[in-house]
Image (cartoon, rainbow, N blue to C red; front, top):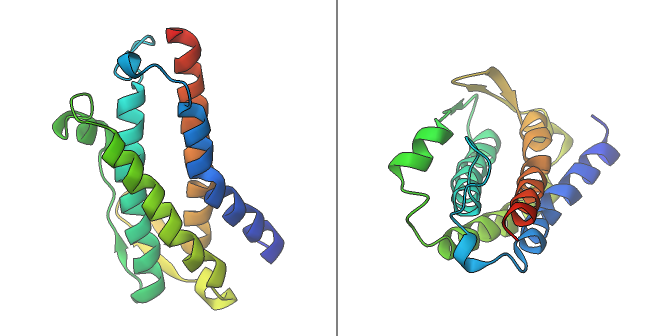
Length: 157
């Protein structure tokens, strides 16, 4: 991956929280737990997932930067949604957490060196895991969920 490609992905990552915010703008508060699409998450579940995913991803990049060949632990996002009561908890603190982790991680990404981007660890579910792979995954993650929120908004309004 070139430096310019990485910078574009970092910019996209940095914009992710704002993109989710725009998708949530005007979403009816009384419909946050609505599930108009069978087998798909509600807005509340998406926001809690973003918070938990972002918390995990923030630790992952920090481990990649700070440890020698770290083990990156996977997790079961569907189990998190059920056992952590995504449908029942207030999503506002989760949204704040998601935004905060993005805000504290973006400056780290912008200061990474070429050597930092080559750092490698081992993901418990997918094997070799690099800082560049991390960026490829998380640059689009929030945008994908923002699109999901927009589809939910169309379905419930």
